[in-house]
Amino acid sequence: MDSHKIYQFIVDESGKGERLDKYILGVFPHTTSRTYLQRLIVSGLVLLNGEAAKKNSEVKPGDTIEVRVPPPEPSHLVPEDIPLKIIFEDADLVVIDKSAGMVVHPGAGNRTGTLASALLYHSDAFKSFGDTVRPGIVHRLDKDTSGVLVVAKNEDARRSLAAQFKEHTIKRRYIAFAKGIIQLDNGIIDVPIGRDPSNRQRMAPLALDGRDAQTVYKVLKRFKDYTMVELSPVTGRTHQIRVHMKYLGYPLLGDDDYGWRNDKKISRHALHAAYLGFVHPATGEFLEFSVDLPQDMKVLEKG
Image (cartoon, rainbow, N blue to C red; front, side):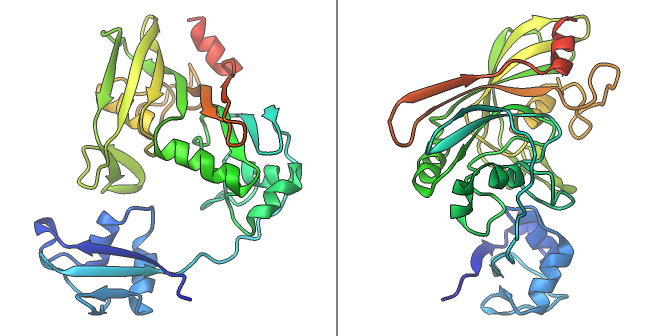
Protein backbone atom coordinates (compact mmCIF):
# COMPACT_ATOMS: atom_id res chain seq x y z
CA MET A 1 0.00 0.00 0.00
CA ASP A 2 1.37 3.41 -1.05
CA SER A 3 1.62 5.62 2.04
CA HIS A 4 2.99 8.67 0.22
CA LYS A 5 1.03 11.90 0.70
CA ILE A 6 0.20 13.46 -2.65
CA TYR A 7 -0.04 17.20 -3.34
CA GLN A 8 -1.18 18.55 -6.70
CA PHE A 9 -0.84 22.08 -8.08
CA ILE A 10 -1.68 23.85 -11.33
CA VAL A 11 0.75 26.62 -12.21
CA ASP A 12 -0.82 30.08 -12.49
CA GLU A 13 0.39 33.13 -14.40
CA SER A 14 2.71 34.19 -11.55
CA GLY A 15 4.82 31.06 -12.09
CA LYS A 16 5.77 31.73 -15.71
CA GLY A 17 9.42 30.79 -16.26
CA GLU A 18 10.08 30.02 -12.59
CA ARG A 19 12.21 27.09 -11.50
CA LEU A 20 10.11 24.12 -10.42
CA ASP A 21 11.56 23.80 -6.91
CA LYS A 22 11.13 27.52 -6.23
CA TYR A 23 7.53 27.48 -7.45
CA ILE A 24 6.61 24.49 -5.27
CA LEU A 25 8.24 26.18 -2.26
CA GLY A 26 5.94 29.16 -2.74
CA VAL A 27 2.71 27.17 -2.94
CA PHE A 28 3.41 24.23 -0.66
CA PRO A 29 0.90 24.20 2.26
CA HIS A 30 3.45 23.19 4.92
CA THR A 31 6.83 24.49 6.01
CA THR A 32 9.59 22.83 4.01
CA SER A 33 12.93 23.71 2.41
CA ARG A 34 14.12 24.05 -1.16
CA THR A 35 16.81 21.45 -0.45
CA TYR A 36 14.19 18.91 0.65
CA LEU A 37 12.11 19.58 -2.48
CA GLN A 38 15.19 19.11 -4.66
CA ARG A 39 15.77 15.73 -3.01
CA LEU A 40 12.19 14.73 -3.88
CA ILE A 41 12.76 15.79 -7.50
CA VAL A 42 16.00 13.82 -7.80
CA SER A 43 14.22 10.80 -6.26
CA GLY A 44 11.54 10.94 -8.97
CA LEU A 45 8.80 11.92 -6.52
CA VAL A 46 7.83 15.10 -8.36
CA LEU A 47 5.91 14.82 -11.64
CA LEU A 48 5.59 17.67 -14.12
CA ASN A 49 2.68 17.10 -16.50
CA GLY A 50 2.72 13.41 -15.60
CA GLU A 51 6.42 12.81 -16.15
CA ALA A 52 9.33 12.73 -13.71
CA ALA A 53 10.63 16.26 -13.35
CA LYS A 54 14.25 17.33 -13.67
CA LYS A 55 16.08 19.37 -11.06
CA ASN A 56 16.40 22.40 -13.36
CA SER A 57 12.87 22.22 -14.83
CA GLU A 58 11.01 25.47 -15.38
CA VAL A 59 7.23 25.80 -15.19
CA LYS A 60 4.66 27.64 -17.28
CA PRO A 61 1.02 28.54 -16.69
CA GLY A 62 -1.25 25.51 -16.93
CA ASP A 63 1.42 22.97 -15.98
CA THR A 64 0.32 20.27 -13.54
CA ILE A 65 2.66 19.42 -10.67
CA GLU A 66 2.34 16.36 -8.47
CA VAL A 67 4.49 16.05 -5.34
CA ARG A 68 4.66 12.69 -3.58
CA VAL A 69 5.89 13.10 -0.01
CA PRO A 70 7.07 9.89 1.68
CA PRO A 71 5.87 9.14 5.21
CA PRO A 72 8.09 10.52 7.98
CA GLU A 73 10.59 8.21 9.54
CA PRO A 74 9.66 6.93 13.01
CA SER A 75 10.18 9.66 15.57
CA HIS A 76 11.20 7.43 18.50
CA LEU A 77 9.85 10.08 20.85
CA VAL A 78 11.42 9.56 24.27
CA PRO A 79 9.39 10.03 27.49
CA GLU A 80 10.87 12.76 29.70
CA ASP A 81 10.17 13.55 33.35
CA ILE A 82 9.07 17.16 32.85
CA PRO A 83 6.64 18.72 35.36
CA LEU A 84 3.21 19.59 33.95
CA LYS A 85 0.61 22.02 35.34
CA ILE A 86 -2.47 19.81 35.06
CA ILE A 87 -5.82 21.57 35.46
CA PHE A 88 -8.08 18.60 34.73
CA GLU A 89 -7.67 14.97 33.74
CA ASP A 90 -9.86 11.92 33.20
CA ALA A 91 -9.73 8.76 31.08
CA ASP A 92 -10.29 10.71 27.82
CA LEU A 93 -8.28 13.88 28.02
CA VAL A 94 -5.96 16.12 30.00
CA VAL A 95 -6.08 19.92 30.22
CA ILE A 96 -2.77 21.65 30.85
CA ASP A 97 -1.61 25.14 31.71
CA LYS A 98 1.42 25.32 29.42
CA SER A 99 4.33 27.46 30.51
CA ALA A 100 5.96 29.92 28.14
CA GLY A 101 9.14 28.44 26.68
CA MET A 102 7.81 24.89 26.28
CA VAL A 103 7.55 23.52 22.75
CA VAL A 104 4.40 21.43 22.21
CA HIS A 105 5.84 18.78 19.90
CA PRO A 106 9.27 18.08 18.36
CA GLY A 107 10.39 20.01 15.32
CA ALA A 108 13.56 21.35 13.78
CA GLY A 109 15.91 22.30 16.60
CA ASN A 110 13.51 21.10 19.31
CA ARG A 111 13.79 17.33 19.69
CA THR A 112 13.68 17.16 23.50
CA GLY A 113 12.03 19.00 26.36
CA THR A 114 8.65 19.07 24.62
CA LEU A 115 5.13 18.70 25.94
CA ALA A 116 4.80 15.52 23.83
CA SER A 117 7.69 13.87 25.68
CA ALA A 118 6.29 14.99 29.03
CA LEU A 119 2.91 13.45 28.17
CA LEU A 120 4.47 10.08 27.32
CA TYR A 121 6.15 10.04 30.72
CA HIS A 122 3.00 11.20 32.51
CA SER A 123 0.68 8.46 31.25
CA ASP A 124 0.94 5.21 29.29
CA ALA A 125 -2.35 6.19 27.60
CA PHE A 126 -0.41 8.37 25.15
CA LYS A 127 1.59 5.37 23.95
CA SER A 128 -1.60 4.04 22.33
CA PHE A 129 -1.11 6.59 19.52
CA GLY A 130 1.94 4.71 18.33
CA ASP A 131 5.22 6.17 17.14
CA THR A 132 4.16 9.74 16.55
CA VAL A 133 5.59 13.11 17.56
CA ARG A 134 2.08 14.38 18.42
CA PRO A 135 0.47 11.81 20.76
CA GLY A 136 -3.10 13.02 21.25
CA ILE A 137 -2.22 16.62 20.40
CA VAL A 138 -5.04 18.30 18.45
CA HIS A 139 -3.92 21.93 18.72
CA ARG A 140 -0.85 23.75 19.85
CA LEU A 141 0.39 26.98 21.35
CA ASP A 142 3.57 28.65 20.12
CA LYS A 143 6.65 28.02 22.24
CA ASP A 144 6.46 31.42 23.92
CA THR A 145 2.66 31.46 24.31
CA SER A 146 1.47 30.40 27.74
CA GLY A 147 -1.93 29.09 28.79
CA VAL A 148 -4.59 26.41 28.57
CA LEU A 149 -4.33 23.48 26.14
CA VAL A 150 -6.27 20.20 25.83
CA VAL A 151 -4.78 16.84 24.76
CA ALA A 152 -6.68 13.63 23.94
CA LYS A 153 -5.76 10.36 25.70
CA ASN A 154 -7.38 7.99 23.17
CA GLU A 155 -8.27 7.96 19.48
CA ASP A 156 -12.03 8.54 19.96
CA ALA A 157 -11.33 11.65 22.03
CA ARG A 158 -8.75 12.84 19.52
CA ARG A 159 -11.22 12.58 16.62
CA SER A 160 -13.95 14.39 18.58
CA LEU A 161 -11.70 17.27 19.63
CA ALA A 162 -10.14 17.55 16.17
CA ALA A 163 -13.63 17.81 14.65
CA GLN A 164 -14.57 20.58 17.08
CA PHE A 165 -11.49 22.56 16.13
CA LYS A 166 -12.17 22.01 12.42
CA GLU A 167 -15.77 23.17 12.81
CA HIS A 168 -14.67 26.19 14.89
CA THR A 169 -16.97 25.23 17.80
CA ILE A 170 -14.12 25.30 20.32
CA LYS A 171 -14.26 28.52 22.37
CA ARG A 172 -10.94 30.29 22.95
CA ARG A 173 -9.95 33.58 24.51
CA TYR A 174 -6.45 35.00 24.72
CA ILE A 175 -5.06 37.95 26.64
CA ALA A 176 -2.35 39.98 24.94
CA PHE A 177 -0.48 43.23 25.39
CA ALA A 178 -0.01 45.15 22.16
CA LYS A 179 2.31 48.04 21.29
CA GLY A 180 0.48 51.35 20.92
CA ILE A 181 -2.99 52.54 21.89
CA ILE A 182 -5.83 50.71 20.15
CA GLN A 183 -8.48 53.34 19.45
CA LEU A 184 -11.59 51.21 18.86
CA ASP A 185 -13.01 49.39 21.88
CA ASN A 186 -13.73 46.26 19.86
CA GLY A 187 -13.79 44.87 16.35
CA ILE A 188 -12.98 41.94 14.10
CA ILE A 189 -9.89 41.41 11.98
CA ASP A 190 -10.93 39.53 8.83
CA VAL A 191 -7.77 39.08 6.79
CA PRO A 192 -6.53 35.86 5.11
CA ILE A 193 -3.20 34.42 6.26
CA GLY A 194 -0.65 32.36 4.33
CA ARG A 195 3.06 31.61 4.23
CA ASP A 196 5.39 34.57 3.95
CA PRO A 197 7.07 34.07 0.53
CA SER A 198 10.28 35.70 1.79
CA ASN A 199 10.48 33.58 4.95
CA ARG A 200 8.68 30.23 5.00
CA GLN A 201 8.98 30.02 8.79
CA ARG A 202 6.66 32.99 9.17
CA MET A 203 3.12 33.80 8.10
CA ALA A 204 1.85 36.87 6.28
CA PRO A 205 -1.51 38.65 5.83
CA LEU A 206 -3.04 38.82 2.35
CA ALA A 207 -0.63 36.16 1.04
CA LEU A 208 -1.32 34.62 -2.36
CA ASP A 209 -1.95 31.23 -0.74
CA GLY A 210 -3.81 32.81 2.19
CA ARG A 211 -6.70 31.08 3.93
CA ASP A 212 -9.64 32.83 5.58
CA ALA A 213 -8.85 34.02 9.10
CA GLN A 214 -10.90 36.00 11.58
CA THR A 215 -10.02 37.29 15.05
CA VAL A 216 -12.43 39.16 17.33
CA TYR A 217 -10.80 41.67 19.70
CA LYS A 218 -11.89 43.73 22.70
CA VAL A 219 -9.82 46.34 24.50
CA LEU A 220 -9.55 45.63 28.22
CA LYS A 221 -7.27 48.45 29.36
CA ARG A 222 -5.13 51.20 27.83
CA PHE A 223 -1.76 52.18 29.26
CA LYS A 224 0.73 54.91 28.35
CA ASP A 225 2.16 53.21 25.28
CA TYR A 226 0.51 49.78 25.07
CA THR A 227 -2.92 48.15 25.26
CA MET A 228 -4.26 45.09 27.08
CA VAL A 229 -6.63 43.28 24.73
CA GLU A 230 -8.78 40.13 24.72
CA LEU A 231 -8.65 38.15 21.48
CA SER A 232 -10.95 35.36 20.29
CA PRO A 233 -9.77 33.57 17.14
CA VAL A 234 -12.67 32.27 15.06
CA THR A 235 -10.31 30.27 12.85
CA GLY A 236 -7.06 28.59 13.84
CA ARG A 237 -4.31 29.63 11.42
CA THR A 238 -0.65 29.41 12.37
CA HIS A 239 0.46 32.54 14.28
CA GLN A 240 -2.99 34.01 13.58
CA ILE A 241 -3.25 36.43 16.50
CA ARG A 242 0.31 37.67 16.12
CA VAL A 243 -0.07 38.24 12.36
CA HIS A 244 -3.47 39.90 12.72
CA MET A 245 -2.29 42.27 15.44
CA LYS A 246 0.69 43.29 13.32
CA TYR A 247 -1.67 43.88 10.37
CA LEU A 248 -3.89 46.02 12.59
CA GLY A 249 -0.85 48.14 13.44
CA TYR A 250 -0.47 46.97 17.04
CA PRO A 251 2.04 44.09 17.18
CA LEU A 252 2.40 42.21 20.44
CA LEU A 253 4.99 43.40 22.92
CA GLY A 254 8.10 41.23 22.81
CA ASP A 255 7.28 39.68 19.43
CA ASP A 256 10.57 39.69 17.52
CA ASP A 257 9.01 37.89 14.52
CA TYR A 258 6.03 40.15 13.90
CA GLY A 259 6.84 43.32 15.81
CA TRP A 260 9.52 44.92 17.92
CA ARG A 261 11.15 43.25 20.89
CA ASN A 262 10.94 45.31 24.06
CA ASP A 263 12.90 43.50 26.74
CA LYS A 264 12.26 46.26 29.25
CA LYS A 265 8.63 45.16 29.35
CA ILE A 266 8.68 41.39 28.61
CA SER A 267 11.21 38.90 27.25
CA ARG A 268 8.78 36.92 25.05
CA HIS A 269 5.71 37.78 23.01
CA ALA A 270 2.96 38.89 25.38
CA LEU A 271 0.27 36.31 24.56
CA HIS A 272 -1.59 34.03 26.97
CA ALA A 273 -4.33 31.48 26.24
CA ALA A 274 -6.60 32.38 29.14
CA TYR A 275 -9.78 30.38 28.38
CA LEU A 276 -10.78 27.20 26.56
CA GLY A 277 -14.26 25.71 26.21
CA PHE A 278 -15.24 22.49 24.42
CA VAL A 279 -17.64 19.54 24.48
CA HIS A 280 -16.31 16.52 26.34
CA PRO A 281 -15.85 13.72 23.76
CA ALA A 282 -17.46 11.04 25.96
CA THR A 283 -20.00 12.80 28.19
CA GLY A 284 -21.21 15.55 25.84
CA GLU A 285 -20.83 18.07 28.66
CA PHE A 286 -19.52 21.52 27.77
CA LEU A 287 -16.35 22.08 29.79
CA GLU A 288 -14.73 25.45 30.46
CA PHE A 289 -11.24 26.16 31.78
CA SER A 290 -9.56 29.44 32.68
CA VAL A 291 -6.00 30.11 33.79
CA ASP A 292 -4.56 33.27 35.35
CA LEU A 293 -1.94 35.43 33.69
CA PRO A 294 1.64 34.32 34.36
CA GLN A 295 3.82 36.62 36.43
CA ASP A 296 5.57 38.38 33.53
CA MET A 297 2.20 39.44 32.10
CA LYS A 298 0.81 40.40 35.52
CA VAL A 299 3.60 42.96 35.66
CA LEU A 300 2.33 44.45 32.39
CA GLU A 301 -1.22 44.46 33.74
CA LYS A 302 -0.08 46.73 36.59
CA GLY A 303 1.19 49.29 34.08
